[in-house]
Image: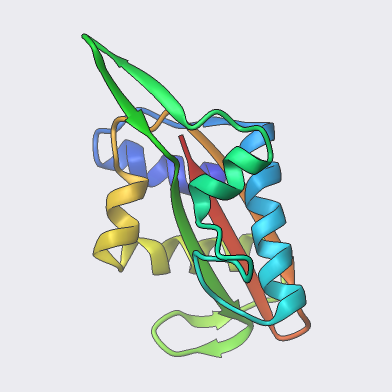
Length: 143
């Protein structure tokens, strides 16, 4: 997911994202929560959005952008991908590369998700994936 996301950024003239282990823990926790509790939303069952989840897990959510500017919060893309013949994506094998390619394609086909992937202010990414036996739940968190 990191490589594929950075390939999209490079082809659009945006600097690559660096892998962030702590942000990946936040992303993995959300993907696991969705898979285990059978929901699909940026808001978890406790009413927390991405920024609140990150803060609860001790991740910094305020970023200095320079010149007195800062951003508050983290960005998030989520996806729910089955395997087999998937309309619009062809055959998705049950392996990391195939699922990753289909997921990044789904993100890039959506203006909002694409916008987060290509947002130049983001420098870090963490990705988490969980499987419930039918769907792969992927969370990309950006900072």
